[in-house]
Length: 309
Image 1: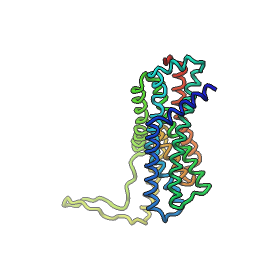
Image 2: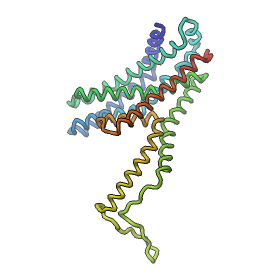
Image 3: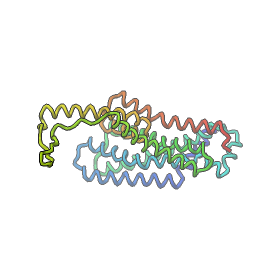
Image 4: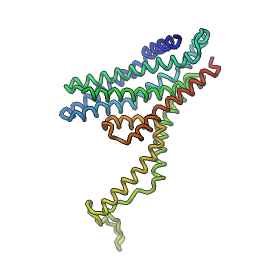
C-alpha cells in the first residue's frame, strides 16, 4: 500500500511540474505541425503511406524530445528529496526503501505513458481532420509504436534515476545523465560505424569507369562496362555483401544504443513487420528492454543499500 501512495505522489509531481508540461506540449505541437505539413503534401497518398507518415513523424520527434523528457523526469528523483530535506522525513515513516524507489519509478512511468498517449491522441486527431480514419489494424500499430516509445523514454529515465542514486547533488546527477545520453546515443553508434568500416574492409570498386592517365599526363574516365553487363551485376552483388557485413557489425554496437534500437523497431513496424528477420527483431527488442532494466536495477540497489540521507 505504501508503494501505491509513493507512486501517486510521484505521478502528481511529475504531471504538475513545469518542465513536464512544457516538454509534452512542445512535443504535441511539433508532431501536430509536422503531420499537418506532411498530410498536406501527401493528401492523395495511399493509406499505407499515411500510416508510415504518422509513425515516422512520431519517431523523429520522440527520438529528440523523448530523451529529454525521460532524462529530466529522473535525474533529480532522489537528489531533489535529499536537497529539500524530505528524504529524511520520508524514511522516518514505516516505508521500505524499495517501496520508495519502486513507487517513484511507477509514478514516473505512468506520467511518461500519459505524455505519450496525449501526443498520439493529438496526432490521431490531426489525421482524422484530413478525413483519413485509421483502421483497427492501423490503430494497433500506433499502440505498438506508443509502447516502444514509452520504453525508449523510460530508458533515459533509468539513466536519470541511476545518476540520482549515485550523485550527491542534482547538478552532478544531471551531468552524469547527460554523459550517459551522449555516450550511448551518439558515441556508441559512431564507434560502430567506424569499427564496421574497418572490419568490413575496402568497398568493391565499381566497374563502370576506369581512371586512366595518358602519356601527356592528362587523366580521363573511360567506360569499360555497361550498367547491365555481367561485371555490373557482379559488382552489385559484392556491394550488397559488403553492406551486409557492415550492417551486421554496426548492429552489434546498436544493441547498446537506445536510439538505434528504437529506430530499428519503429522501422519494423512501418515496414508492416517485413523488415529484418524475427530473430534480429527479438535480439533488438531484448537489448532495447535490457538497458533500462540494468540501469534501473543499479540505481535501485544503490538507493536500497547505501546511506543516501
